[in-house]
Amino acid sequence: MKKDFYEILGISKSATPEEIKKAYRKKAIEFHPDKNPGNKEAEEKFKEAAEAYEVLSDANKKAKYDQYGHQAFDGGGYGGGQHMNMDDIFSQFGDIFGSAFGGGGFSGFGGGGGQRRVKGSNLRIKVKLTLEEIANGVEKKVKVKRKVQAKGVTYRTCPTCNGSGQIMKIANTILGRMQTAATCHICSGSGQILDQKPAGADAQGMLLEDDTVSIKIPAGVVDGMQLKVANKGNEAPGSNSIPGDLIVAIEEIEHEFLKREGENLHYDLYISFPEAALGVSKEIDTVSGKVRIKLEEGIQSGKILRLKGKGIPSINSYGNGDLLVHVNVWTPKTLNKEQKQFFEKMLTDENFIPKPEKSDKSFFEKVKDMFS
Ligand SMILES: [Zn+2]
Image (cartoon, rainbow, N blue to C red; front, side, top):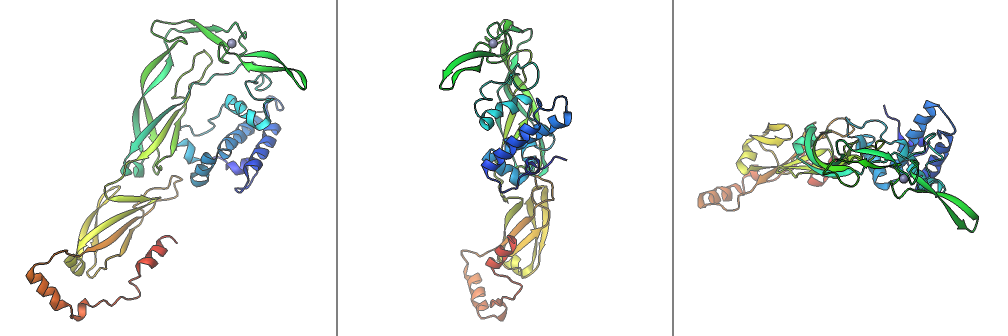
C-alpha cells in the first residue's frame, strides 16, 4: 500500500506551493543519503519525499493526484512503485536549494562515483480507446520508433572530463572567485564518448528501431490522462545510461449512444406514444453488451431509470458508476386523418388529462437528486 503524498511530507491538502516546497526541503535534508550513509530506511524515505514533491509541486500532477490518487500515475499494473531514480531526485534540487546544488553539480551528492547516469528522452504516444475498452480495461500493443544502442557499439571514458561528466570552471563573482561545476559539453555528462560503432549507427552509436510495446490500461481511465511505461522510451548512449519512459496519453473515442459523465453513463431512449401507454421491453446499449429493460405501462417522458453498476469503474476501484436511461416519449410530427380524429376525441378523455402525482418528480427535482 503506497503512502499518501501529503502524509509523507507532513502537510495538509490545503498546503500552499511554498509550504510544500518547505516541507520537502526539510525531509530532503533530514533523509539525505550523505547524512545517513548506508541507511536503507532513510534512503527509502528520501525517495518517497522526492516522489511526493515531484507530484505535489506540479499543479497538473497535483490535480490528478487529488482526484485519482496514486493510480493517476502508475496506471494500475506497471511502474507501480518508486519510479524516480537518484538522478531525477538530485536534478530536482536546483529549484529547491538554489543554483548551488543545481546545474550538474551532482558530485557532492549521491555518495560515490559522482558520475551522472544519463537518461534517454521520453517518447509520447496517444492511444485511442472505446468506451467499452475504458470500462473493462484493455491491453494495447503499440508500435513505437525508439532510439536504441546499435549492436556492437562500444564507449570509452571521456578524455575531456575524465569520466566525471563535469568540468570545473572558475568564475569571478562579487563574492570572489568561485569554483562551479558544469556538465561536460563533450559527453553531455555521461562521462563516456563513442569508441566504436557499427555501420548505420549515428554519431552517438544509436539506431532508430521499430518496437512493439504492450501497455496494460486499467479500467476507468479518463480522456487526457497520462500513463507511464517505465524504460520504454529512447535509450541513451553510454554503458551506464538508462532508457527514458514511454508516456501514453489516453484519448476517449466518443460512443455512438452512451454519454460519459465521470463514472456515470447516460443513454437517451426514445419510445413511441403507444409504447409509453402500453408498456414495452427495449434493448439498450451498455459497455458490457446489450441489455433488455422493461418499461411499465403508463411510463412518463423524462423518467430516468438507473441501472446500478452499469457505468464506468472508478480508477481507484471503489466500485462502478451507474447507467442512467432517460426515457423520451416520441410525439408524432404528422398525423393522418384517422389518427387526428382519434386524438381529437381523446382531448376530452379523462385518461389523457395530465394528473402528475408526487412520485412523478419534475425534471429539476430529478436532476437535483442525481447530483446529490
Ligand atoms: Zn565528458
